[in-house]
Image (cartoon, one colour):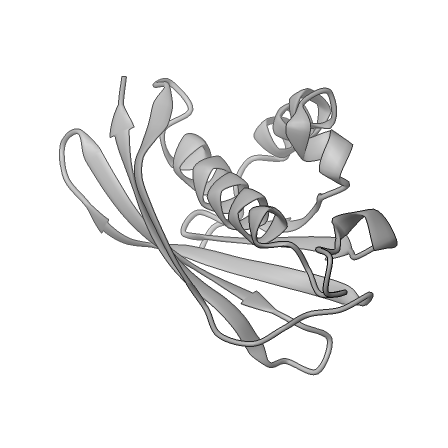
Length: 135
């Protein structure tokens, strides 16, 4: 699989740092044509009141990673999330977490992706699917 263009990766990283993505602290590790890897060092401000990674951070990482992937696949179009479904499966604490996302289906105007959030031990903490539409 060919790697996404370095120019797109640089541009996306630069733009993302100025948005909510950058505020949260996400880091793009790998971007290929059909796959992206994003990581985050979970800090105390990412936790909920019971001391585990907040569900909104899961959602942000998963939606953002899958969104970057579809934008890379269609850099000439604006892609918007039309559906995001998340299954919370295990907890993550103050550790480095990783989201791996891939494209699972594509039509003329829609793309469906799958994302997995893993903790440092490799446990599956959240599983998500998302659908994006060209706008």
